[in-house]
Image (cartoon, rainbow, N blue to C red; front, top):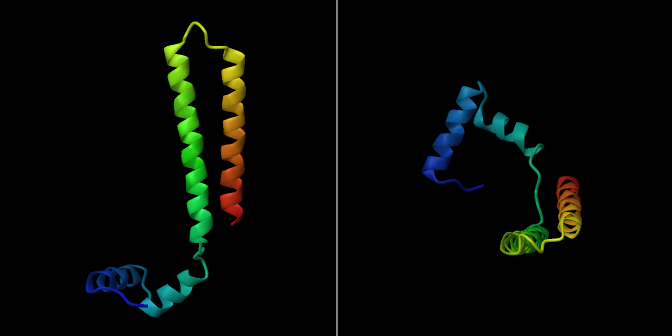
Length: 95
């Protein structure tokens, strides 16, 4: 693993503060690191961005057409968005 001089010094300081050698600190932490698949992460972020865009469009429509907004329909869409976001967060935790 390559580190800049600043990164090395920061890691060394953390190890010293923990009362460990740098090797012990790294060995301790390597087992706790989760490696994420970048392609999956990008797709998940893109999907969340689309959900966010839809939510913003709904909010704009509701604010523009306050008298015409069907509350039940808007709430149904919001509940569907919440369910999708929950599903994505659960999938992320399992990955």
